[in-house]
Length: 355
Image (cartoon, rainbow, N blue to C red; front, side, top):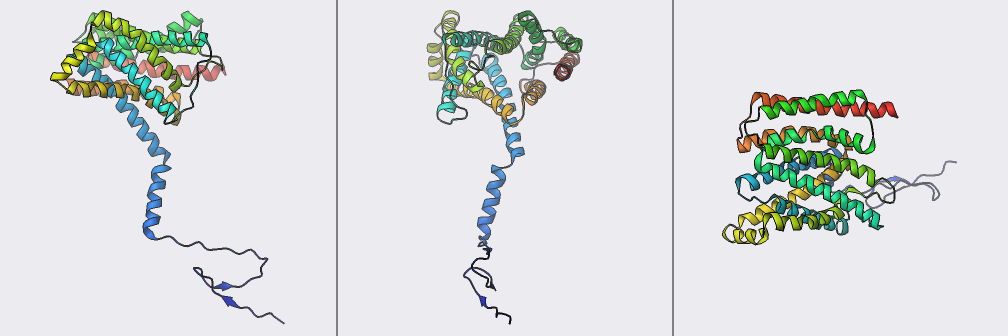
C-alpha cells in the first residue's frame, strides 16, 4: 500500500512535497528587492576589481612623479623660490609626518623598530646619500628644463653598474655592459644639442643621478641581514627625519634665514603656502605610490613604468613650459631610453642564466 503524500506550504517558499524529518531539506532564500541587488553589484565591482585598482594606482604614480617634477620646476625657476635645500627639507618633514600617520594610524604596513646602534648608523648613512641626491636634483631644476633633467636621470643604470663593480666587485655579463653604450651615447647627443644647456645644472643633475644609484647599491649592502631589513615605508619613516636634520644646518648656512623670508613672502602672497604644502604632499605621494605599484604589480613593472615616465614627463614639461627642443636632443633622449630598455632586458636574462 502506497502511503499518501501531502502538500504543505511554508511561509516565503514555494509549496513542496513533505518529506521525512531525517531527510535533508533545501531552503530557498528570499530574493532581495531590485535596488538592493543593484547596490550590491556596484559595490562589489568597485571593491573587487583588481584591474581597476591597479590602473588607479599606476595613474596616481604617474601623477605624483610628474607632478612633483613640474611643481619643483615651477617653484624654483618660474615662481622665484630659489631655495632648493629648504624645499628638500620640507619634503623630508612631509615624508616623516605622512609616513608616521600611514604606519601608526592607517596601518598600511606593520611598524618596525631600529634594533641596534649599528642599524641606526647604517640608516643615517643612507639618509645622507638620499639628501645629496634629492638636493642636487632639485638644484638642477633651477638651471635645466625638466626634459633634459629626465634625460640625464635615465642614465641611472650606468652609475648603478659602476658603483656595484667598484663597491661590491660585482661583474655583469658582457651583454649588460654593452647595453650601457647607448645609454651614455644618447645623453652625449642630447647634451650637445640642448639649447638651454647649463654646465653647473648638468653637473649637479649628474650628481643627483649618481647619488640615486649609490643609494640603491649601498642599501642592498648594509640592510641585507634579516634582522636589519626594513620595509620601504618603515625605512622612509626613519630616513626622512634624519635627512631633515642633516639638511637644517646647510639650509641655515647656505640659504640664510629662509624660514623668515618665506613667512614674510607668504604675508603678501598666501598662494606660496598652498604651493609649498601641495609640493611637499606630492613628494610623499611619490614614495607611497612607489610602494603601492610594487605591491600590486612587481618591481620589474615599476622599472618599466619608470622608463616610460621619463619620456612622459619630458613631453608634458615641454607642453607646459614651452622650452625649446631640437631633433638631435629628442633623438639622444630616445637612444638613452632604448639603452635603458636593453639594459633591463639584458639584466633579466643574466639573472635567469645565473639561477
